[in-house]
Amino acid sequence: MAGMAEQRIRCVGAVVFDGAGRLLLVRRAREPGRGRWSVPGGRVESGETDAQALMREVAEETGLVVEIIRLLGSVQRHAPDAAVFDIYDYCCRVTGGTLRAGDDADDARWCDRQTLGTLPVVAGLVETLADWHCLPPAPDMERYRSFEPPQGPDGPPCRGVHTEGLSGGSGAGTHG
Image (tube, rainbow, N blue to C red; front, side, top):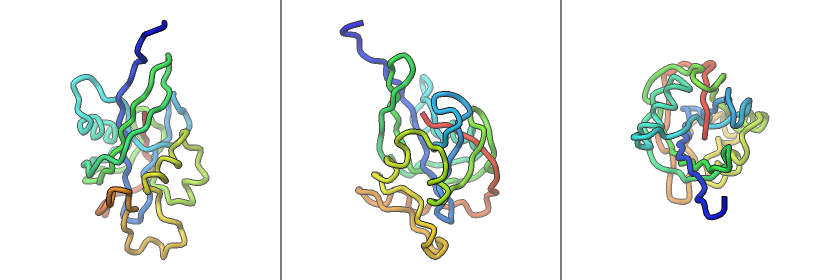
């Protein structure tokens, strides 16, 4: 209908690295993007802050507990019924939990840059992470001995992100 404002759906996403510099990704079990990999996250529910939604989504999808370090940026993606997902991505640090699949994702894993390049990911993920200087380091970098998270245009987006003592394995999550 002419003159109607498009519906905007606020969403959050978590950009999380482990101590080896690998990025946390989840494979979506539902549309949009079913079967594709993304960072964990999802819709902000009525009455929630971004922080509350992000911590809830990450816990539901991956079993991990996170704290927010800083906002990295935002992107817009097409949503069903001509709506728009407004996605705000935050750099996060893992503070607890055990990586496992859950909620609307059917797998989760820590990915280095080489693995990331082989996965079917949601549209725009790699390009956006590259723009924000948030791709995992290249695999030929001394096995990430002293990993420093990538530097963003406004300073370090994820300095000090680590997950010593957390178990790996299969987990899940969604983004958008």
